[in-house]
Amino acid sequence: ERGRAAIQPTYTGWRYTYAPADSAEQFEVATLAYPLYLAWHATLTFHDRFAPIADRYARQVEKARELWQQLRSLPRVTCLLDTPPEAGLVAFTIADRDPQTIESALESQRIFIRSMPEPLCLRASVHYFTTSDEIDRLVEAIASV
Image 1 (tube, one colour):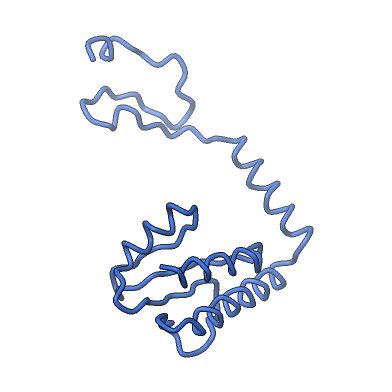
Image 2 (cartoon, helix red, strand yellow; image 1 turned 30 degrees about the vertical axis):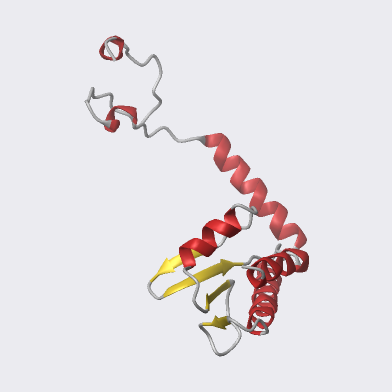
């Protein structure tokens, strides 16, 4: 704490103005991380090389529908949509269960979904690289809560 006021940055990059502050603002910087741009470009190139965007979207919708259909087969689960989702989000409720409690229970199994406040529900996100095994694991975990 005492020494913090005496510390002066030796290099801050461009787009940065050093202004001592007593808040978290003192740690803010605006230096662009060029290596991250290169990594981002490499990631997009990798994905485009193996699956064009239209194919990725179609697979994402296919996986969301797969999850939606399996969830609808569970007796206490109600999907918010009456028709298969058109994107990678599947929202649902479990009768007599608190969404936040379910979210925490699944997280302890390293299964990550979100509880949503409005409408009060759970939401699972799938992507084109989500596997059927991962969907099965989620559905099994939900069936057992």
